[in-house]
Each structure stands twice: as structure tokens, then as C-alpha cells.
Image (cartoon, rainbow, N blue to C red):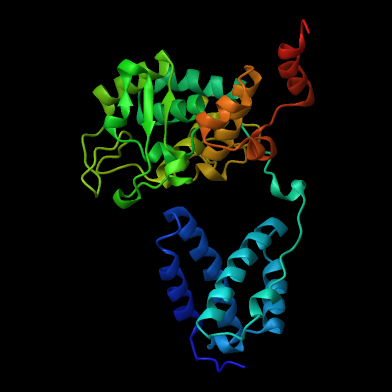
Length: 335
């Protein structure tokens, strides 16, 4: 049996994250940090100051402790990270060999794994009409329109530089530039040129000419979507979408019987508290569903929106059974 080397949990976590920096995207690294922060909270609460003491019994205790706090799917994701971390600790002789196999991952079905929240096309159209009338070519209008029309991820939107917008060719060029601060989820495989319609070209052009802040980011690049001093952040994009999807923002009656004058969600920073507000991800889901309803082949959607057909069907296709039938019907009539 290999002698174990004493190692504090926080130091082990630091070593693990450093070891994986080169192979993980920034977002994935942040997710790992979040999962392992939970583990450090547990070791502190249990008075564990040496990874040598983390054995099968301790891991069962952690699993039960975490299960009381989160949903099953979150627990599953947490434990996958913990399992990989413990495997790393085995390699550096901080825990006994085979300990990682004692991390039991819960089984889930599609009902646990699929998030069904998405924005319907009619609602997205209402929001765009309002933004086009009262906030034309503003940062919020341009970001929302781009996300809805293209169905791209926030990370792809944030990666766009001014030079990636080609109005004369109706396209946006999405590129993986991790060394300059903007990595794509699927790295080089996510690189592509995305066609955009004339209406969006006009809005982006007017935004660039009239409202875009002339700034450089920390890497000396000219971001297409800029705040007053740098490239917009993921948090900024989230807040803009949360705000735009609040019913009261576009003048609709509150479905939750709140008074806009006193509602805590009626602010830029508090918009996410509105039960009707949505983040960028449901916007992407709604965009993909809308595109499917326009009889667009799945191969085209897969390439345009950087999503495999398997994942598209499982997580993003929110067509009803009748909508799916109508899509198939277009190809079957006349056979």
C-alpha cells in the first residue's frame, strides 16, 4: 500500500485546477471551481484538514450532505467533478488508490436533465418590436436581436470583434481566441461564419455607427459588443436579456400581480427575480425551435448554431408533437 502524503483540501483543489487550466475553457474551469468550492465547504464543516482522511465513508457523507441542498441533476454534476478531482488526488498520493471509484454518481433520466424553459417566437417578436421602436440599435436591442436571429451561445456573441462583422456579406465570423480572452465552448470546432438577414445587418450597422462605445478590451481588441470601457461581460448580457423578457419592460401587464413601482424585480440588477424573466439560454432554445418550425433541415441548424443533432433533439428542440408532424409533412406530401 502506498504511503499517503499529507495535503490540505484547499491546496489539493488549487493543484487540481492549475493542472487542468490548459485543457478546460474558462467557463468549464469556473464550473469546476464552483463544484470544488462546495467540497471545501464540506471539509471545513466536518473539520477535515487533510485529504488523507477522505475515504469511501466520508464521500458517502458528502453525497448525503449535498443531496439535502440541491436537485438531483445538480448533485450529479457536482459528483462528476468530485470524482475527477479525487482521481487526481490518487495520482499525487493524497488519498488511497481506488477512492474515486467510491464516488457514486446518481442515475437520472431525461426528465431530470432537460430544462424545458424557452421563449416562444410570438413573445420574442413582441420584445423585438418594442426594442426596435423604443430602444432602436441600442446595445440591448442589438444583443437581443442577434441572439434570437442566430441562436448562438453567449460565449460566441462575446467572442465577436468589430472586424468579425461583415455587413456587405451579411455575415458574422465566430472564432476561437482563448489566448486573447474569448474561448468558444467547442473550441476550434465551434468556429464558423453565420449568415444574418438584412434587417439585423442594418440594426448592427446603426448600433456600430451611432451607439457602440469606441473601446479596446484587455487584449487590445475592438469588441463588437462593448460597454463603456471594455468588452461586455457574460453577466451584462444575462442582465440585458433578463430585463427585456420582463413583461412590464415592454408595457405588458404583470402576470404576477406586482406593482412595477414597488416590485423588487423592476430594476436592472434585480430583473432576474421576475418569475417571467428568462436568461440567454432559453432564448437560444426558442430560436432553435423557431428555426425548426420554419422547416429548416437539422443539418443546417446543427452547423449554424454549433449543436449536434443528438443534443439538439434532447435539449433544444421544443416543438410540440403537432409542430414536429407539420415539419415532417413538408417532406412527405406528394410521395
